[in-house]
Image (cartoon, rainbow, N blue to C red; front, side):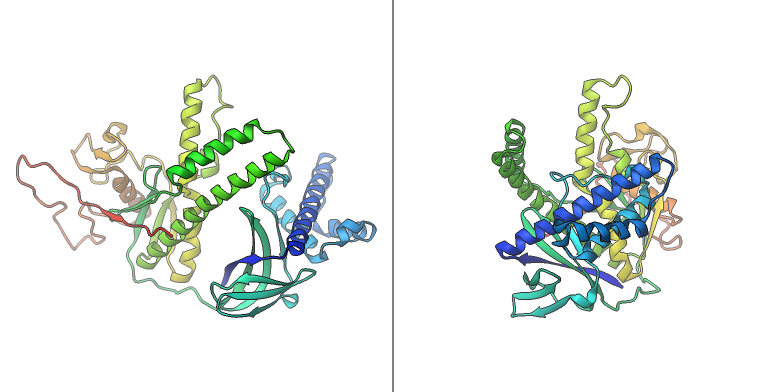
Length: 412
């Protein structure tokens, strides 16, 4: 099984400048290749990796700037461009803008990569034209290295090794099925009544990021102050992104370790988070509300959660099932009655037909699991012959209280 191992680099000043130069060259090759492909498509022709690679070799012999970067990282850039164009279409692939693209490049030849451990905290790797680069040794690579990717994030350089760890996906899983409802109030709610959530940005970080946005709007384009402000914003948002990645990986590990089947809604997050400005005659208040909803969806990391579950499922044998998300939050899990009025609020669901009460997110998660082909009685059992009584009896006149488990997420 192929797995990734990422380490933080400690580069010298010359090595950092060299990495930045390699990334700039790769960005120029990507943009030039994309423009060439689009021009060919406009004329009714076709361009792919093979002729572009031949033209790159010719251009590199004539251009000294291109000669500064290793040939195989430029060829790998063209391979990535070819894959992106075949997958998404030539005119849907994005440009790599200098201000919005995170610099990165990949060394695909494992024979030219060497990794050594120096001591308990440090290791080093030998990369073409960079020489020996030092990185923080946080774990063993644990297998044969296939490639190495160098990238920059929030002002720091990282190296990611693609490793063949030799682990095989288990054929069977002894756990039980579970349904997951992703929301904006709680990141992930299971059909068993567990809530997985945490705050990714503190109040101080939100205020600081808002002030930095105001400072960026007032700064002159291309100025040194604007570059410093942008760096500070990336540093704040980098911490938030790391917490979100840690949360999704932590949650996915627990879910796949306990459950044999994970049912998720088939959500198109990219389409759901498009702006409302392009719609017909939409009032300004709706545009602002849609922007807030988009921000909440992206903050909870719906797509990242799905990717983390799929990645963790490779090592546990868990099956990931996608179901139609239509009416999962409006359907009563007991009588299957569909009514939008049954959802009284974000957290309260009271069926207008049978009077069944449940937490709205838990009820939706149960519907998701039922849509995946697994029966879920209201008492929470996953078998039809275990329990005939669905809910415990309560004294007449006593208020109904629903007990759910809130999962505490560790904060690093």
